Each structure stands twice: as C-alpha cells, then as structure tokens.
Length: 131
Picture 1 (cartoon, rainbow, N blue to C red):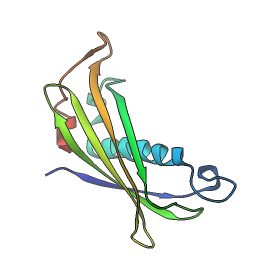
Picture 2 (tube, helix red, strand yellow):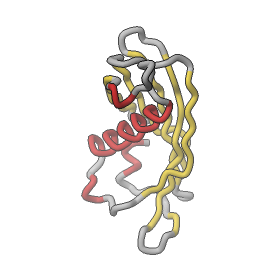
Picture 3 (cartoon, rainbow, N blue to C red):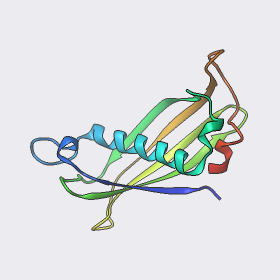
C-alpha cells in the first residue's frame, strides 16, 4: 500500500495576490515542499545521490480559491510508476482543513537519473519504500 503523506501549510501574505487569494504558483510550491518533506520523513536521504531525479511534468486543477490564513492540507501519494523505466507520479490533493473542501488537485511526474551520465535509471530501492 502506498504511503500517504500530509503536509499542512498556512497561507501567508507571500502566497497571495493583493485581493488575498493564493497565487496559482503557490500551489506548485506547496506541492514541491510536501514532496520533499515526504522523502525526508520516509527515506534515508544519505542513500540518495544529489540530484537523483528531475521533475518532467506538473499539472494542477483548481476548484476553489485558498485565502490568506487558510490552513491547507496537501495530501501526497505516489501513484502510477514504473520501476525499470525510472518514473513515478506524485498525486496531490489540496484540502481546506477548516471546511474539508477539496480546493485543488494535481500531479507531478518525476524521472530518476544518474547525474554522472545524464541517463535515466530505474527507481532506487530506497524510493520504493513510498510505493
């Protein structure tokens, strides 16, 4: 069973427009933060060469805005993946913690690679803990 990781973010002034709603780009920032926190909290990062993956694609669908001071839960799971082809898809769900409303959802596809050769490699054994 795949690990679900929950990262909580409070919407701050730096996240918002002059009208007080969160920038669309803020969601990508929160997703990346949640992804990295998930890895740090669940994997032995000393085993991962740096850098060890690249983001190949990001997609975000917005349903309802987040506002200044909202508490947002970013729920992350690893979805579709292929060990030998060296890719994994992170699925993100953004939920307003107070109302329980799903406000956005999206995904990122990452590719594992060897930084010395620049070639794609299979998913590492350490990352498989998240699958």
